[in-house]
Length: 322
Image 1 (cartoon, rainbow, N blue to C red):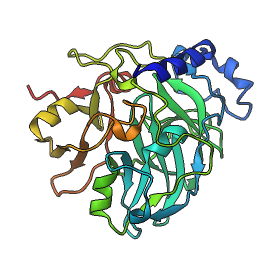
Image 2 (cartoon, one colour; image 1 turned 90 degrees about the vertical axis):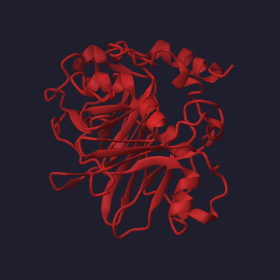
Image 3 (tube, helix red, strand yellow; image 1 turned 180 degrees about the vertical axis):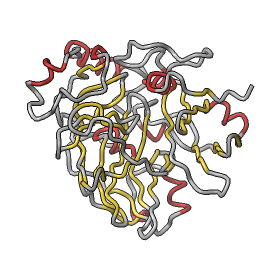
C-alpha cells in the first residue's frame, strides 16, 4: 500500500516516457540551439511525461515569519538558505516536491533553489552566468532520472545534479553552487527564530502530501537504465556528494561525524524522508547532514541517491572508510 500512489504515477507516465534525438525535441524547443551540446548518448534523455513547464517552477515567492507558520510539521524537510545581509530563509520540500525550482533573490543575490525528487538532489545555485541573470524552469525531461532545467533567456538546458549547461547557447557553462543544506523544520526554527519561511503557493496542489509514496524504498529508480552503484551500495541509498566524493549516509549515521580530506560531515536525527510515506512529515528518519571545512564554514554539497552520483561521476571517489 505504501507505494500505491507512486505505482499509479508510474503507470500514468510510463506510456509517454519516450527517448528522443535532438531532431525529435526540436519541434518542442524551436528556440534551443541543439547544435551545441555535451550530451553524447541521447538514449539517456527521456520525457518523464509532463511537457515544458508542466511542472511549474516558482519565482519571487512570498515569505512569512518562521514562528507564524503553522502548516509545516516539525520533522518535515526544508532547504535552509543563509546569505550574509539577509534573514535566513527556509524553502519547504512540501512545496519543492511539486514545483522543483524556486527562483528568488536573497541579500541581493539571485538564486535558484532546486529539488529533484527522483534523485533526492536538493541544490541551490547562483542564477548569474557571464553577467546575465537567468530564470529557470522545468523541461519535463530527465537524464539519468535527474531533472533537466532550462533558462528562459536562452532556452538552454541544464543538468540539475551537475549545475551545468548541456544543450544550447550556454552549453558547458557551470552555475555556482551555494552552501545550503536540508534540515528539519524544527531545526531551522530553533536556530533562526527570527527567520523567514516560504509561504504556501497559490497553485492548486496537495501540499504536504508526497506524490512519490514509497519511492526511496524501491530497488530501482524511475526511468533509469544505467549501471548500479559499485560496492553493493543500493541504488536508492543516500550519499553525501562533495565535489567528486561521496560518503554513504549509513556510514555517517553510524559514526555521527567523519573528518576526511579537510572536510567534516555530521549526521543528526530528526528529519523525515520526503519520499517515504504519503504524509511527508510522517516519513522515516533520514537525519540531517551538515558539511563544513576546517574553519567550520559550511560547504556546498548534495545529499543524493547513489545511482545518480555513479551516473554523473562514474570515476568519483566512494568514501567508505575502510
